[in-house]
Structure formats: structure tokens, C-alpha cells
Length: 349
Image (cartoon, rainbow, N blue to C red):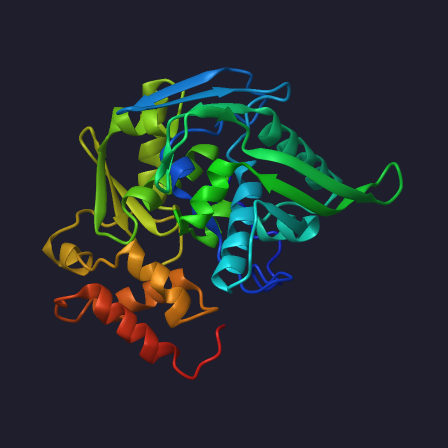
């Protein structure tokens, strides 16, 4: 059985060192919550419809089919780059220009001819699919049809038989750009791009969205399958969950299966995804280590407190430092004070 993690295809590099500044991979929270992207590795021409509370999403594929979770890597890269520019005080708009080779390298994709051809197909699916939604972003509610990217333009270089995309310009839809302007995005693990199976990527997204930096997130098995957008038979979905619990390969989080409930636990700080079973139980000692919570508002303030630093890394370092300390009256205030002391006089890595 192949490893659930893809190999690190580009190990010798500075991650997300682009032509602007240090960039942390980030995803928008709305698409992490809802199953917009297809989990099928083949062309998926189904029309999808999801209802959650008072929100409804209809996804109508274009001629190339629905966008896949792997296609989403293009948007993650664009969101990450625009957020880095915004945090550096630069003016941003919905159009982002990037180097295609950098995009492939930083999202752990192949940089051969197949890699470039798959990138073109991803752009066509992202632009061709129509989404009708009532999801709220910022202080607005969108009820309209749109594509995930409004347009794209690229420049080719090379012979007819070995052409490469040299630069790429993508214009994001208003829905995604408003999420960037409203900072409704969260940092994700770099190992997300190494997850081999589409369903594992959805499990990680949901854990990151709902558990975040908190202690745990509990959800019923059937509801989890619905939120993943999985169309497999329930017994096969349950088998996959059991395998994921046993292999313990998701970045940042471990999973336990308790009857009909799936529980996501924040992984011990500094622990990498490995193929080993999680702890048998999460008793009082484990719960005590997991009660530290830093709000998303405090994370966003790090743009001023520690400009240029990886905010997710600082959060992890703080939680590791604070786990043996007494609970603070104001955890956010202590976190920001610790970050100020930790980064004072040090260059951003």
C-alpha cells in the first residue's frame, strides 16, 4: 500500500520565498467549510447541491468538469501571495501575477510537461464551473452565480512539443477576494500539499476550520461524510476514517473514533505526520495540555507585532511554551506579549 503522504518533490528550497516576501500558505474559510471541490480524480460532470442550515450551494460544472481539491492549490497559492502583500502594506486587487514554476514547486507538484498540462486543465475547471451560493463573507451575503476565477492569462515559452507556462495572471472572483480583504483566511500546514488522497485533504481542512488552535472537535460520522462531500458507500467511508485514525498521518491533528463520533485532536506541537497510532485515550493529562486557545483575532494582530514572521509557527511555539504554565486570565494578551519578547531583535526566518 502506498504511503498516504506524497514525497517532498522539491526538498531543496526556501518555502514560499517568492518575488514579494515570505508567504505562509493560507486557505479561505468558506471553501474549507463547504464541499465545493470534487474528490474524484477523474472528470466529474455532476451538478452538486448542498444545504447547511440556511445556506445552499449549487455547483454546475463546465465542459472540463468540476474543479478538484488539487485544483484548489492554485487558489491557495494566490490567496497566500495576496495576503502576504496585504500584510506588508502593499495595495492589492483581485488580479495576481505569478511565476508558474514557483506555483508548482511550492504546492509540491511536478514541474515536467505533465505538471504544466495539469495546471492548464485546473485553470479551465476553476474558470468554467459556476457556483450559486448564499455563503456570507465579510459583512455581505452573496446570492449569485460566479466562477472561482474570473479570468486567467499566461505566456508560453519553448517549442511546440515542450511548451512551458512562464508567467500566469489570475483574476479571482469577488467572493474569494472579499474573504482576503476581510482576513477570513487561515494558515494551513505545508504538509497539506503532500496528502495523497483527496478525502484526506478534506478531513484536514475541516479539522483546521473547526478545531483550529483549540482542544478538539467532535462530529458524527454521517455528518462528517456529508461535510466532506464524499459519495462513497458509508462502509467505505468508515473504513477510510479507521485507516486515517490508525496511520495518524494528517498534519497538525490526530483522530479518534468513538462509536459513531469522530474526534479531531490538535497534535502535540512539533510532531510531524507519521505512520503510528494515536494515543489510546485522551485522559485528563492530555486534556490539560489542550486547553490553551489563542483567538484568530490575536493571530491577525501578529501582522503588526511580528511582521514577516510565520504566524502559524509562532502560534505553535507559544502553545508548546505555555502548555506547562498556569492558565492566563487573558490568553491573547499573554500570547502577544510572548511573541513580542520572542521576536524582539531577531530577523524573521
